[in-house]
Image (cartoon, rainbow, N blue to C red; front, side, top):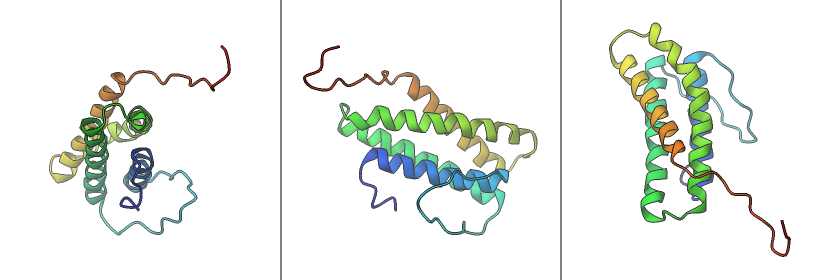
Length: 141
């Protein structure tokens, strides 16, 4: 699916959905509904899902960074960063409490990596200019 989503905003939406699925597996929460049939998650442990989540966030950030370096004027950059930031806010609210229950080790490292990625997204979103209302041609206002 990621390969098929060539536009940054579509790819970002896909990464958010994939991350939501891993987060739901970690926290036991519900997933947001989608039009796409996603099937069952691969079997894994909480550590596996946290590692997947951190890797998914890494990839989403890298995609935005790549677009920013190739086409800094892209209309999709702000939209994608804002979409990631909205998800990051939700994800942080669910992941931060896990710091109290996850001890040291690979599971804790993956949790911290995911939280760090989410904080990077929120910091980047602060630097993105507000979306301007586009006026339709021929209309005054």
